[in-house]
Length: 119
Image (tube, rainbow, N blue to C red; front, side, top):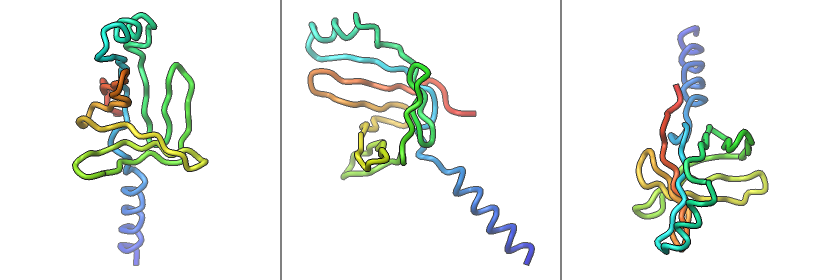
């Protein structure tokens, strides 16, 4: 009986520790394929901002935004990190690789590059 309880506890702890795999510190890079917009984005000073992605939150400039859920969704051959709010609206970032997320892609895009994984 004790072995069964220990197995259940171990499984529960493993499931609680599971995240979406994109937790960590990221640096933000804003860019555009249009030269004027790219220059403007660089002048605004948003390049290099540090963003922390947690299991259910994002910290930017010391401001924490809590989400109902953060998870990875696959659509065809693409993967997206989905941020689901309490009102069930979603924001999606395209997964380029295990350390890079991109949003936008039209005139202006924002790229998040992971610089530190959680300990």
